Image (cartoon, rainbow, N blue to C red):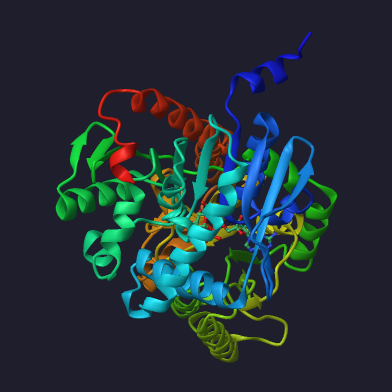
Length: 480
Ligand code: GDG
């Protein structure tokens, strides 16, 4: 007899996940939340994960390299240096990333980067096409691959294709500053389902579609360019139960001891971010400086432990933020440090996931203050790692998508150094009872809205859209 898990898998269409990078199951622990969530889905349903191998090659193969790992097939493509420069470093990370995070001042428009981006999307879609089966559910991830469905439709793909945007969707005024915004918006209408992190993102997308393209709205569906799609919020979650377990693991406990040793009486504030200008790290350092200025009882007693591994290190704006941070931390430490204490400790290397979990748990305050962020998983991981009997306090930017769900955190405006400093001081003196209450409320939601729930909600909706497409005037043909 077929075991129930396999029966369940057999009834479901195969999942094909496409993302910029593919993580081998062996590296999932390092790959972070998305990798873990996708691998779980692929294991459960069986499926294919397709994307860039992470390798640059002088003569990239036109066909993907395929490896099998249990029920999962991993299919990867190398990129040439020129492709990588234009598609990844160029259009994705110097144009779309800053623009979608409202940093028009950092946005570099370069037609060659745009052409390279479109070419890579088409080349990757062309390489995936022969691997597809008729009833596959295809799930594309993030801003690197906005036109991927359009490129697949050009190959005559009829499958259900969904897209999830991990970063915020910009206000129409910003998006329309992009010379190619019409083409990109049109290409989004090749999807059947668009998933965003928050309702605000959905609303901005709808506003743009209506204002700029006269789209018709009906419930969650939007019709424009002769195609109809569903646009909905699916706030991404983490595996909170697993993260809580990791926080109790021997490695995490070791790290906990290292952070707490000699500092039982001190307040450690932790910040963990990819080193990125959207994460508000310089503003955070300034807020800690403001805390030291306003509250002398913090001297010798409070320390910000900032972990910020280098990210996208080849992009000039990322080199600049690294220099800026080193300078600010140096200034603040120079002003306040004592022989046995420095207010800011800044680690510019990646740490292991278990180490991170132990550091979160040992830190009395989690300070998560992005200037703009799709969701921010660090806020969720910090809460999941706490000891429920004696939890720390999360101080969270109102501009993180996570703030919509995590109202029991102390919500702050990251641009307002004084307000952040005051929130930190409030967190320092918060009663055990209040800390427990806030933590319990946050943890309850994290366990309910976890990574499994996120993924299943998205895939169920994508399957449901398939029924809708069977209705008359299904416009695949018109979209081509
Ligand atoms: C994008 C969106 C959205 C960080 N340092 C280390 C390390 N990390 C891990 C964290 C966390 C992940 O990286 C960062 O996730 P975030 O959500 O905070 O931010 P982005 O990387 O910008 O992610 C974001 C996310 O996609 C998911 O949809 O929430 O808004 O921008 O998991 O723990 N992990 C390890 N060592 C480090 O030093 N192991």
